[in-house]
Image 1 (tube, helix red, strand yellow):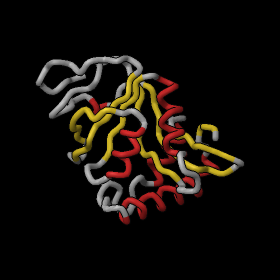
Image 2: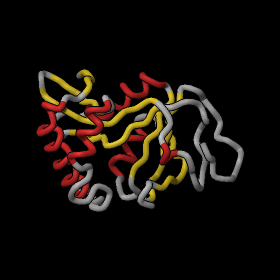
Image 3: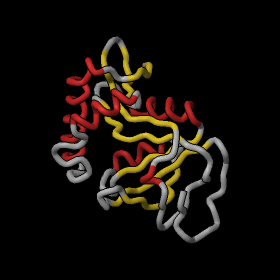
Image 4: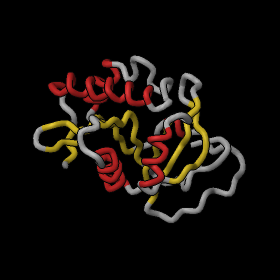
Length: 175
């Protein structure tokens, strides 16, 4: 498997993977995280044009897709009921989805992103037990609650090369 930047010519295949992921989440007790339309085509096109959309490929086939960016994410500016492992520069993953055609492709994507930055943050819906288990198996630590711009709650996770102790402040962290 290898990771490449997504290209606009791959859009229809990427949209199909996201459609299948929505159905998978619904079938596994998580119908609300992405609903019927998330992520929307315009968001995916924006991710591709910004150079932050990646695909996991093997033998010319897309096995998984995800958003990755090194740098701060506004949704991670405040964390509640917990703390980040550290406040060092980090990368983020969003919108990760697997085609389901090869076991381990999502883990491969997480490992690639972690190698890129050594300090990675990600979040998921409370009902997304499949993703929560994937994150735990891949060495991520649950850190607390974050809220999206629309007010939706998400469980926040982080993995860091640094053994970084959680910050001692019981107050929400503002970045």
